[in-house]
Length: 139
Image (tube, rainbow, N blue to C red; front, side):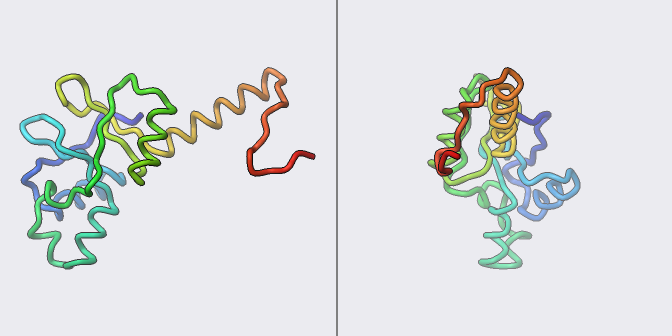
């Protein structure tokens, strides 16, 4: 999970959201209204707005640019559940919110791949060579 969360207001333009994303060197920003999470805006969402109407970035709000799926997860989400949510929604990040719907982090597919690599490395470190890739034939 990454934090602190970079956010834009729901009424900000998509252009402002894009500028914020670029300035922070991020692919996602939280969209908030009165401090509460509304969704997670991705660079793909912005690209979709631009593809439909290049001037739309200046006229559509960040809320309007949100994709159809912008699921939230709790800070204590299980790695498997988080991975399943990403796969089912066809997205690459989840917004982590607390019990009051305040954004506290962003969990990306990259974060989850890091967990997978760490688990694999741990098995190698303790000498467990039974790890096999399901799509690879054994030696």
